Amino acid sequence: MDFRIEYAAPSKPIGEPERYEGYDADSALYAFVRAGAEATMVVGPTRLPMRDVNFVDLVHSSLEIGEQLAACAPSTFEEVRARMPELPPDTRIYAWYVVDYVDEIPLIIFATDAETVRIYTRTYMGANRDVLSVGERDRVEPVTEPRDAVVAEIHSFLSRVFDDLAAAFPFLADDELYLRRRQRIAALAPR
Image 1 (cartoon, rainbow, N blue to C red):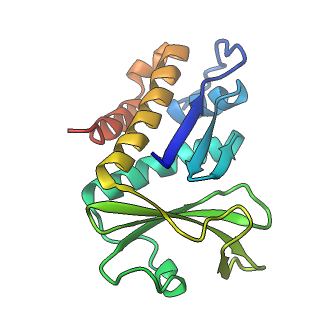
Image 2: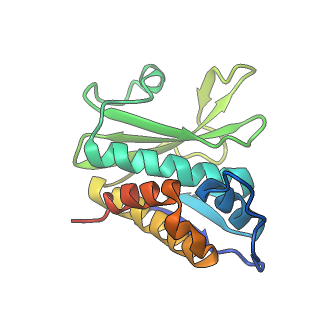
């Protein structure tokens, strides 16, 4: 598959966190990242490493995109349509931009017709991020995958992260946020 999310579990010992009031699955996720958890989003030859806050954002955003793709929800990133006239009018568009880049911000666009997903890499540029271009790391042509395969890849990535998170922090078995996210991830499982 030309779209995948490569995940590397923490490389350093995690240890018992200082569990302050309100400590939850997101708090544990940041501790997990400090211990070296990371991922690389692969779209054809384009490789986008996700560390630190980008890893946390990838976990949150990929869950949302997986849900949107699975449900073929209405488009959530319509401003891209005007900048990409090659997209058919009935295409549903979801996108995620990598938050912790300063100048040339990577944008991953998922465009689906309900059967397949075309995955584009683009770059936001300009002072107001008002220019969408094909940067050096981007592909002109999209990677095209079956929609179910893309959702399954997202499910697999999130399942591995949350399995490792629960193994590192057993107290999460009682955490409301963790349990809600596990339910949402389970809903993405291949049928």
